[in-house]
Image 1 (cartoon, one colour):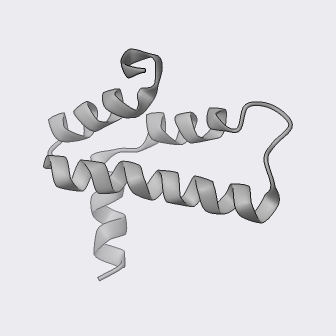
Image 2 (tube, rainbow, N blue to C red):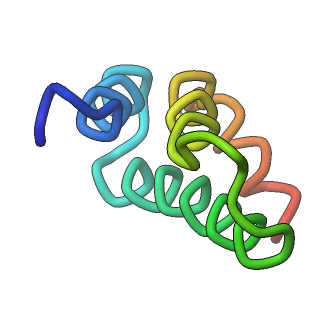
Length: 73
């Protein structure tokens, strides 16, 4: 689905902002894991469940990922 979804765009942006591909994939995966957890815990929203996920991807920054990665060490 390429350009229709923000995933590839987010991966590229995170790499441009200093993450290597490995960390960029983990950053995107962490957002997906959190989103899936919330869906299982609370159930799907009334609308498209991907809207929140995509919004979180658009807000994800390399700096946020680096900070959260440091906090979990």
